[in-house]
Length: 433
Ligand code: PA5
Image (cartoon, rainbow, N blue to C red; front, side, top):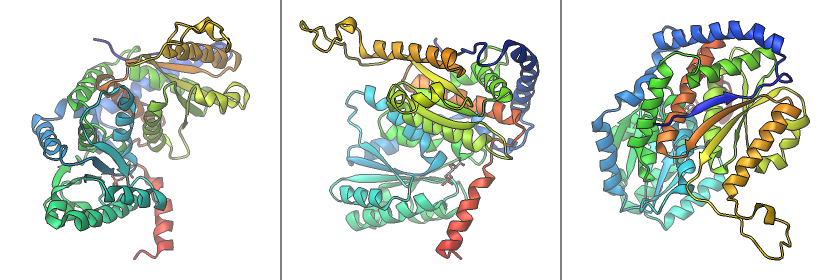
């Protein structure tokens, strides 16, 4: 069975050999120390480590309940609106966007996300669209009080009730929230919504393998069992400490680069339907490590598109960044460049090659240009293909590496205290009591 792998491309110009040799030993020790803290569950935030065991602890009852809800509603609706923000949105969005282009007609409703912004135009257009659609709503919020999803839910609940009446509306709402407390829990209980619990010991950005990710992904028609299987395989790999363990290696390389001088990590994909994998990754690392004036700033680009915008900076601007490249070996569908007799556009030299082959060549050329001429270190994550199984592996691997890496920074990777600052100001300015 294949698994995702990692290799790195640093050269003399990225980290001089002498410095690398000095760094290597101490960073290796640090990586092992952080791995031990994570797996012994003795570090800061250890009451939020439920995600480590999720792939192996998801029970059949949960999968059956999800499938029953999907079967009950899928033929009744054209659209499913999933309401949530941050960790209550990005995982499902990343998976669904990543799988969509390779999917056959699934016969499942269209999944639309809401509650992830305060964009009046977006919500206004969505409400208008829903006037003419049959739809249901999945509302996701661990705290049950986050402003963006709460506003969207108020509007959509009202819209649903006006359209279908309160009883039918209640049967079209699924709530995913805390098991005992919070405003959403109260509303769900009072109205008898089909509800799912987000485990107490799993924080938002680590919750993709809880109902937070599984329910919307199943509603979109994708195989959640295979997603969980992939995560299971990766869990086993991650928990076995060795220097080739992909999560250990990723955390180790990041910290070697960071300790030398690199403060910005640019996550690179070459397939733009993976842009939300980048967004999910940015939240995971940004919220987990960026505190106590520490961390590596997570940024992202999509090549080759952004080679025509940010490529210049990466190749030749301030030398503060390194890249982590997602190398997808195979794609499900492709097109070949045709041969034309007159060769008027001069493209016959690539006639017969598929677009993905050309894309892979562009990737190879860019890695060479950035890491050698541009002195931008490159970490390469190799993924055999994008399907549920490998996405399960990939997401779990990044979560595990994030736990190790956060402890290497000596921060609590599982809280986000500084997110509150803007909220306090916003509530004061809006006159919240
Ligand atoms: O990772 C996190 O904890 C956050 O990004 C939350 O997921 C986000 O703020 C949404 O919170 P909630 O699910 O409570 O609405």
